Length: 85
Length: 194
Image (cartoon, rainbow over all chains, first blue to last red; front, top):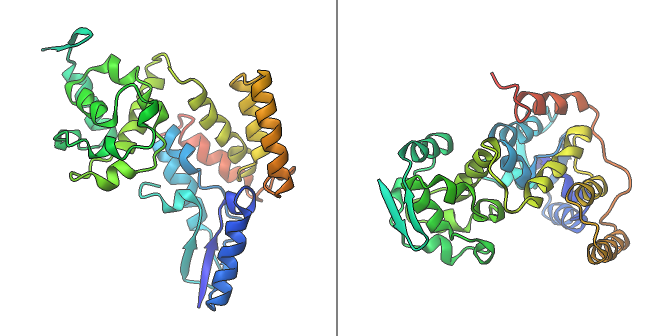
Protein backbone atom coordinates (compact mmCIF):
# COMPACT_ATOMS: atom_id res chain seq x y z
CA UNK A 1 0.00 0.00 0.00
CA UNK A 2 1.45 3.31 -1.05
CA UNK A 3 0.40 6.80 0.03
CA UNK A 4 1.40 10.28 -1.08
CA UNK A 5 2.66 11.90 2.10
CA UNK A 6 2.33 15.52 3.16
CA UNK A 7 4.43 15.94 6.32
CA UNK A 8 3.97 19.67 7.00
CA UNK A 9 6.57 22.11 8.32
CA UNK A 10 6.25 21.13 11.97
CA UNK A 11 7.07 17.48 11.29
CA UNK A 12 10.51 18.57 10.21
CA UNK A 13 11.21 21.01 13.04
CA UNK A 14 9.32 21.54 16.31
CA UNK A 15 7.49 18.20 16.11
CA UNK A 16 10.19 16.08 14.52
CA UNK A 17 9.38 13.18 16.85
CA UNK A 18 5.82 12.99 15.44
CA UNK A 19 7.24 12.76 11.94
CA UNK A 20 9.71 10.03 12.93
CA UNK A 21 7.10 7.98 14.80
CA UNK A 22 4.47 8.39 12.03
CA UNK A 23 6.96 7.10 9.51
CA UNK A 24 8.00 4.23 11.81
CA UNK A 25 4.36 3.21 12.40
CA UNK A 26 3.58 3.33 8.68
CA UNK A 27 6.67 1.24 7.97
CA UNK A 28 5.64 -1.37 10.58
CA UNK A 29 2.15 -1.53 9.04
CA UNK A 30 3.57 -2.03 5.59
CA UNK A 31 2.47 1.40 4.35
CA UNK A 32 4.90 3.02 1.98
CA UNK A 33 5.00 6.82 2.05
CA UNK A 34 5.98 8.94 -0.91
CA UNK A 35 6.59 12.58 -0.02
CA UNK A 36 4.80 15.09 -2.24
CA UNK A 37 7.47 16.77 -4.36
CA UNK A 38 8.29 20.36 -3.32
CA UNK A 39 5.34 20.63 -0.90
CA UNK A 40 4.76 23.96 0.82
CA UNK A 41 3.35 25.20 4.13
CA UNK A 42 -0.41 24.76 4.74
CA UNK A 43 -0.62 28.12 6.57
CA UNK A 44 -1.82 26.45 9.81
CA UNK A 45 -3.96 28.66 12.07
CA UNK A 46 -2.45 31.88 10.78
CA UNK A 47 -3.73 31.27 7.25
CA UNK A 48 -7.41 31.39 8.17
CA UNK A 49 -6.76 34.03 10.82
CA UNK A 50 -5.57 36.46 8.15
CA UNK A 51 -7.56 35.61 5.04
CA UNK A 52 -10.04 32.90 4.07
CA UNK A 53 -8.83 32.60 0.48
CA UNK A 54 -5.23 32.33 1.64
CA UNK A 55 -6.29 29.56 4.03
CA UNK A 56 -7.62 27.56 1.07
CA UNK A 57 -4.90 28.46 -1.43
CA UNK A 58 -1.92 27.41 0.71
CA UNK A 59 -2.94 23.78 1.31
CA UNK A 60 -4.42 23.62 -2.22
CA UNK A 61 -0.93 24.12 -3.65
CA UNK A 62 0.32 21.06 -1.76
CA UNK A 63 -2.62 19.01 -3.06
CA UNK A 64 -2.12 19.99 -6.66
CA UNK A 65 1.51 18.81 -6.65
CA UNK A 66 1.75 15.77 -8.90
CA UNK A 67 2.89 12.75 -6.94
CA UNK A 68 4.07 10.43 -9.71
CA UNK A 69 3.17 6.97 -8.49
CA UNK A 70 0.51 7.18 -5.82
CA UNK A 71 -3.25 7.73 -5.91
CA UNK A 72 -3.78 7.78 -2.12
CA UNK A 73 -3.23 10.60 0.34
CA UNK A 74 -1.84 10.94 3.83
CA UNK A 75 -1.59 14.40 5.36
CA UNK A 76 -0.20 15.53 8.67
CA UNK A 77 -0.14 19.35 8.47
CA UNK A 78 -2.67 21.15 10.69
CA UNK A 79 -4.18 23.02 7.73
CA UNK A 80 -4.94 19.69 6.10
CA UNK A 81 -6.90 18.42 9.06
CA UNK A 82 -8.89 21.63 9.31
CA UNK A 83 -12.46 21.27 8.10
CA UNK A 84 -12.26 24.70 6.53
CA UNK A 85 -8.71 24.59 5.20
CA UNK B 1 -33.84 49.57 18.65
CA UNK B 2 -31.92 50.05 21.88
CA UNK B 3 -30.34 47.40 24.03
CA UNK B 4 -30.05 48.12 27.72
CA UNK B 5 -27.18 46.41 29.48
CA UNK B 6 -25.54 46.80 32.87
CA UNK B 7 -23.15 49.30 31.31
CA UNK B 8 -25.87 51.50 29.83
CA UNK B 9 -27.87 51.86 26.66
CA UNK B 10 -26.45 50.72 23.34
CA UNK B 11 -28.07 50.94 19.96
CA UNK B 12 -28.45 47.80 17.88
CA UNK B 13 -27.14 47.99 14.35
CA UNK B 14 -29.12 45.61 12.15
CA UNK B 15 -26.92 46.40 9.17
CA UNK B 16 -23.86 45.23 11.09
CA UNK B 17 -25.59 41.98 12.06
CA UNK B 18 -26.42 41.40 8.38
CA UNK B 19 -22.81 42.13 7.44
CA UNK B 20 -21.64 39.51 9.93
CA UNK B 21 -24.12 36.96 8.53
CA UNK B 22 -23.08 37.67 4.97
CA UNK B 23 -19.29 37.92 5.37
CA UNK B 24 -18.90 34.97 7.73
CA UNK B 25 -21.65 32.78 6.30
CA UNK B 26 -22.13 31.51 9.85
CA UNK B 27 -25.71 30.74 10.94
CA UNK B 28 -25.62 32.92 14.07
CA UNK B 29 -29.45 33.00 14.27
CA UNK B 30 -29.56 29.29 15.11
CA UNK B 31 -28.06 29.99 18.57
CA UNK B 32 -30.46 29.38 21.49
CA UNK B 33 -27.89 30.21 24.20
CA UNK B 34 -27.36 26.71 25.61
CA UNK B 35 -23.77 27.81 26.45
CA UNK B 36 -22.23 24.47 25.49
CA UNK B 37 -19.60 26.37 23.48
CA UNK B 38 -18.53 28.47 26.47
CA UNK B 39 -18.45 25.55 28.91
CA UNK B 40 -15.94 23.73 26.72
CA UNK B 41 -13.91 26.77 25.70
CA UNK B 42 -10.23 26.55 26.67
CA UNK B 43 -9.69 30.25 26.01
CA UNK B 44 -12.78 31.71 27.70
CA UNK B 45 -10.76 32.58 30.83
CA UNK B 46 -8.96 35.22 28.75
CA UNK B 47 -12.11 36.59 27.07
CA UNK B 48 -14.15 39.59 28.13
CA UNK B 49 -17.26 38.16 26.41
CA UNK B 50 -17.77 34.39 26.38
CA UNK B 51 -18.30 32.74 22.95
CA UNK B 52 -22.09 32.45 23.45
CA UNK B 53 -22.19 36.17 24.30
CA UNK B 54 -20.23 37.03 21.15
CA UNK B 55 -22.88 35.20 19.10
CA UNK B 56 -25.65 37.10 20.90
CA UNK B 57 -23.88 40.46 20.45
CA UNK B 58 -23.44 39.68 16.75
CA UNK B 59 -27.16 38.84 16.40
CA UNK B 60 -28.05 42.16 18.03
CA UNK B 61 -25.54 44.03 15.88
CA UNK B 62 -23.69 45.57 18.83
CA UNK B 63 -20.73 46.42 16.66
CA UNK B 64 -18.46 48.21 19.15
CA UNK B 65 -18.83 45.51 21.78
CA UNK B 66 -18.09 42.70 19.31
CA UNK B 67 -15.25 44.24 17.33
CA UNK B 68 -13.65 45.78 20.44
CA UNK B 69 -13.72 42.56 22.46
CA UNK B 70 -10.65 40.53 23.43
CA UNK B 71 -12.57 37.32 22.63
CA UNK B 72 -12.23 37.61 18.85
CA UNK B 73 -8.43 37.78 19.26
CA UNK B 74 -7.78 35.12 21.89
CA UNK B 75 -9.89 32.37 20.29
CA UNK B 76 -7.42 29.62 19.36
CA UNK B 77 -9.66 27.94 16.76
CA UNK B 78 -9.49 24.67 18.70
CA UNK B 79 -13.04 24.00 17.45
CA UNK B 80 -14.35 22.42 20.68
CA UNK B 81 -17.34 24.79 20.50
CA UNK B 82 -18.45 23.97 16.97
CA UNK B 83 -17.81 20.26 17.55
CA UNK B 84 -20.22 20.31 20.51
CA UNK B 85 -22.73 22.92 19.27
CA UNK B 86 -26.15 21.27 18.79
CA UNK B 87 -26.85 23.78 16.01
CA UNK B 88 -23.45 23.45 14.31
CA UNK B 89 -22.67 27.15 14.54
CA UNK B 90 -19.11 27.60 13.36
CA UNK B 91 -17.87 29.97 16.07
CA UNK B 92 -14.14 29.79 15.17
CA UNK B 93 -15.03 30.84 11.64
CA UNK B 94 -17.20 33.64 13.07
CA UNK B 95 -14.23 34.79 15.17
CA UNK B 96 -12.00 34.78 12.05
CA UNK B 97 -14.50 36.95 10.16
CA UNK B 98 -14.95 39.31 13.12
CA UNK B 99 -11.27 40.05 13.69
CA UNK B 100 -10.73 40.46 9.95
CA UNK B 101 -13.57 43.02 10.02
CA UNK B 102 -12.01 44.74 13.04
CA UNK B 103 -8.69 45.05 11.19
CA UNK B 104 -10.39 46.39 8.05
CA UNK B 105 -12.46 48.88 10.06
CA UNK B 106 -9.38 50.09 11.94
CA UNK B 107 -10.80 49.22 15.35
CA UNK B 108 -8.30 49.44 18.22
CA UNK B 109 -6.97 45.93 18.89
CA UNK B 110 -7.02 45.04 22.62
CA UNK B 111 -4.53 42.19 22.09
CA UNK B 112 -2.08 43.71 19.57
CA UNK B 113 0.48 40.91 19.76
CA UNK B 114 -2.03 38.41 18.30
CA UNK B 115 -2.29 39.86 14.76
CA UNK B 116 1.48 40.52 14.91
CA UNK B 117 2.07 36.83 15.60
CA UNK B 118 -0.03 35.71 12.62
CA UNK B 119 1.63 38.26 10.36
CA UNK B 120 5.15 37.12 11.29
CA UNK B 121 4.10 33.45 11.11
CA UNK B 122 3.27 33.91 7.44
CA UNK B 123 6.39 35.94 6.57
CA UNK B 124 8.76 32.94 6.22
CA UNK B 125 5.98 30.97 4.50
CA UNK B 126 5.78 33.65 1.83
CA UNK B 127 9.54 33.91 1.47
CA UNK B 128 10.62 30.25 1.66
CA UNK B 129 7.39 28.27 1.16
CA UNK B 130 7.86 26.66 4.57
CA UNK B 131 7.85 27.74 8.19
CA UNK B 132 11.18 28.91 9.60
CA UNK B 133 10.81 29.25 13.37
CA UNK B 134 14.00 31.22 14.07
CA UNK B 135 12.97 33.97 11.64
CA UNK B 136 9.38 33.96 12.89
CA UNK B 137 10.45 34.26 16.54
CA UNK B 138 12.99 36.98 15.77
CA UNK B 139 10.42 39.01 13.87
CA UNK B 140 7.86 38.49 16.64
CA UNK B 141 10.20 39.72 19.38
CA UNK B 142 11.06 42.76 17.27
CA UNK B 143 7.56 43.66 16.04
CA UNK B 144 5.68 42.88 19.27
CA UNK B 145 8.42 44.66 21.23
CA UNK B 146 9.09 41.79 23.62
CA UNK B 147 12.29 43.35 24.95
CA UNK B 148 11.81 43.07 28.71
CA UNK B 149 14.42 41.12 30.73
CA UNK B 150 11.75 38.56 31.65
CA UNK B 151 10.80 38.01 27.98
CA UNK B 152 14.45 37.71 26.97
CA UNK B 153 15.25 35.13 29.67
CA UNK B 154 12.10 33.10 28.82
CA UNK B 155 12.84 33.14 25.10
CA UNK B 156 16.55 32.36 25.48
CA UNK B 157 15.86 29.43 27.83
CA UNK B 158 13.13 28.05 25.59
CA UNK B 159 15.25 28.53 22.47
CA UNK B 160 18.22 26.73 23.97
CA UNK B 161 16.07 23.82 25.15
CA UNK B 162 14.44 23.53 21.74
CA UNK B 163 17.83 23.62 20.02
CA UNK B 164 19.20 20.86 22.29
CA UNK B 165 16.15 18.74 21.36
CA UNK B 166 16.70 19.37 17.62
CA UNK B 167 13.49 21.39 17.41
CA UNK B 168 15.07 24.53 15.98
CA UNK B 169 16.83 24.66 12.64
CA UNK B 170 19.18 27.51 11.82
CA UNK B 171 18.61 27.34 8.08
CA UNK B 172 15.25 27.57 6.31
CA UNK B 173 13.95 24.51 4.43
CA UNK B 174 13.12 26.48 1.29
CA UNK B 175 11.03 25.02 -1.52
CA UNK B 176 12.08 25.26 -5.18
CA UNK B 177 9.04 27.07 -6.56
CA UNK B 178 9.14 30.17 -4.34
CA UNK B 179 7.44 32.26 -7.00
CA UNK B 180 4.24 30.22 -6.52
CA UNK B 181 4.09 31.32 -2.89
CA UNK B 182 4.44 34.98 -3.78
CA UNK B 183 1.62 34.56 -6.32
CA UNK B 184 -0.64 32.92 -3.72
CA UNK B 185 -0.12 35.78 -1.27
CA UNK B 186 -0.51 38.42 -3.97
CA UNK B 187 -3.81 36.96 -5.20
CA UNK B 188 -5.33 36.43 -1.74
CA UNK B 189 -4.37 38.26 1.45
CA UNK B 190 -2.54 41.10 -0.27
CA UNK B 191 -5.66 42.40 -1.93
CA UNK B 192 -5.26 41.22 -5.52
CA UNK B 193 -8.62 39.43 -5.52
CA UNK B 194 -10.72 39.67 -8.64
